[in-house]
Structure formats: structure tokens, C-alpha cells
Image 1 (cartoon, rainbow, N blue to C red):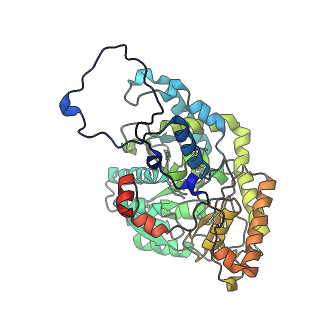
Image 2: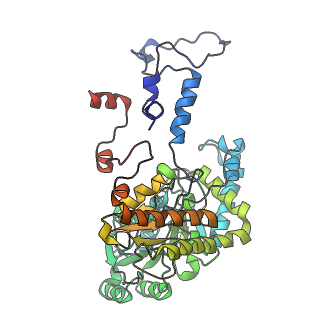
Image 3: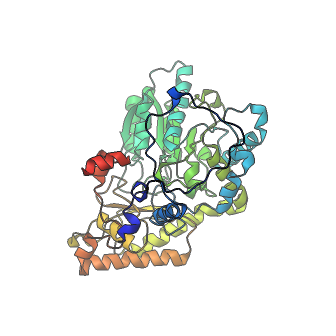
Length: 469
Ligand SMILES: *Cc1c(COP(=O)(O)O)cnc(C)c1O
């Protein structure tokens, strides 16, 4: 591709003495910075004219792929459209310019927003109280597990240190339990993707008095609705444990059912997924934690402030602008779209669990394994056709996982376009496998070495110069 556009760093465009700014005249007299506070050498800043800066960053931004530029079917992440009204509301200066340390009496409007969101989330989940302090889903999990731990401690039930987690769980579940000082007990899944009740009964019979909680998500990580929640909740409650709901992806639940009604006691919600905040690249997020009546006294103090308020503003704007009746359509439409893609592709992609899914589903690579074309190759080839790749190699239950979540926002035409391309790639895998294996061909860079990039990230300009010398 065009190296002139993609290869340069802003530092390489720098020409000594070139400026893109002029400062206004200083009307306030001189201010001498004490010598000991001055830097000895000038900072290494690029010197560029305004047009160069504008072109540089505009070209960089054109390399970005976002939900505003194309279809983004990333499973387990709910890359739904972020309505622009959210941004307008979150940018209102009355809210945006608040300081986190302002006295409470001067931020009554912000408190009213949080109270409104609290009410909406309680109505949507069937739980009684939320804390808004956690900054992300995983932080919410930790907070929720601390609630559970505090609850058991308050009763002198100190031996309850084990958390049951299905083998299909999101990786953050066992990680959060470990960070909270709890021990993870894995319960198996059956071939149909549901929790194996016999295995759970065995665990409860053996360890009942030590069980702090069971962590689950429903629909589970395979995008399947767990039908045995009432039995599972009864088993766990009867042995003295609590039910934790990982509500990172609440999309299919909106308008369908509520975790509180299913027997869950504590949950977190990823506002940045289900309630439409842009969240690529690791943030910002918000992972409010909800609890059943009586458990709110066990909320730990995980942050001095009220979480990422901008995310809450967006979530509130989204909920209020959709309103009750439209919000009820989110789950059913997300489910319809996922099933439409699944049914349209299952003759060419391997569908290991062939049932009705919720908002997402998992293929296990191409059906025809003789071509040697892997899930990675399919994902890379999709980039050539202008689509973001689905989630790949997760969940870990299958070797060639390809996890697709279209969300409720996409039109039938968009879904049909994606289906056509997925079928075309399956055909290419047969007729010209090398073409798929060497993809992508149309992107600024080809396949990156993600292991090297993760183990040896180059994060500064100086480091890059040193590495190149
Ligand atoms: C995304 C996700 C999480 C983690 O949320 P973060 O905000 O990334 O910390 C936890 N559980 C599930 C099921 C998820 O999809």
C-alpha cells in the first residue's frame, strides 16, 4: 500500500522551525519559571505545519476500522452501533466539565443521572440496588465476588471460599475469583453446551459447605440459553451459596427475561457493550454491580469516585432514547439476526451445537477440513472484503472457534452481504486455498506477528529508533 500515507510517524515529518501555531500576545506580564524547574534540554516534539498534522492524523484515522465504517460481528463483545445522540448528551458541558472532587451538593444533576440509570437497570435486571464504581466488566466481577465474600464473612461462614465456574466461562470469571482469593471449581458442560447437572450435583454434595458462589452467564459463552437455571440456583442456594450472573453481554436478555427473576443474587453489567458506548481498544468501560435486596450493605469501596461517568451518561441516553417498548426489541432482534446468519452458513461452516442460539453463536471452522484453510485464514480473508473479523479461537471448547455476533442494528442487506462473502471464502478455500491462506491482500499491512507484538511491544519513538539501529 501507499507508504507515504502509512509509513510515516509524525516525528519523521518534523522540520526544524516549522510551526503550526501562533500564541496570542501575553497581556499579563512576565512570569519567570524558576531555573530548577526548567528542563535542561528541549522536549523532543515534532515541528510541523497545520496541514501536515491534519493530513497525518486523518490518514491514520482512515486506517481504523469501527462500527461506523463497517460490519463488526465480534462475538462476546457486542459491537453494536453507538447512536450519536449519546455523544451529544455525554458532551454537554454541564456534565463534561464536572470535577470528580466537587462537593456533592454541586453535582446534583450528575447524581440524578446515576439515580435514573440505577432505576432503569433495576427494572431491566430484577435486582434491587446497583453500585456504579467499577470501571469495567472484570472489575465488576471482582466487586461482585467481594460482595459475596463479605456476605459470608458477616455470617461467620469463613470456610466458603470456593467458586463454581462452568468450563465454557469467559476467562475473566476464574481470574476474578482468583484475585478475590477464592478457589475455582470447574463444572463440566454437556455435549449440547448446557451445564452438566450431574457434575454440579457431585460438586455440591462433596463441597457444599465450602461453596461461596456459582458464576454463570446466560446465554452462556456459546450463545446458548441455559435452560436449567432454576435447578442450578436451587442446588446452590440450598447449600448456602449465592448465584453470580456475568451480565457483560445483556443484549439478548433485553425484553426477554431478567437475571433477578431467574434466581441470581449478584451481577455486573458491561454498560459499554449492551448500552452502546464505543469500546474498542480497551476502554473506557463501566461495570456496575447489582444485588438482591439486603446485599447492598456489602458493597466494597473499590473506587473513591463514581466510575466512568461518561459511559453512564451514554447508557442513560441510550436507554431513555429507546424507551421501554423499543428496548424490548433489542434481545429478540439480536437473536433473530444471529440465527439468520447461523442457518444461512451452517452447510459450509461446521456448527458443533446445532440449536437455536441467542445473540451469538460459534462455528468450528470450515466444514470441509481437507482444504487446510483455518479459522485464522478465514478471518484474515474477511478483511479483504471490508469486514471486521469475528472473534476467533474463543471459546476454547473447539479447536477452530469462530464466534459471530451481528447485533440487532444490522439490516437484512448487511447480513446478506456478509453471508455471501462467508460463502465465497468457503468456495475459495476449495478452489484456491493459497489465496485464503496468504490473506489479507488489501490491507496496509499483512499478517502481523501477534506473539512478538505482545511480548515485545514498541511503545515509544526512541525505542523504535534504537530497535532499528
Ligand atoms: C467482555 C466480557 C467480560 C469482561 O469485561 P471487561 O469490561 O472487558 O473487563 C466478562 N465476561 C464476559 C462474558 C464478557 O463478554
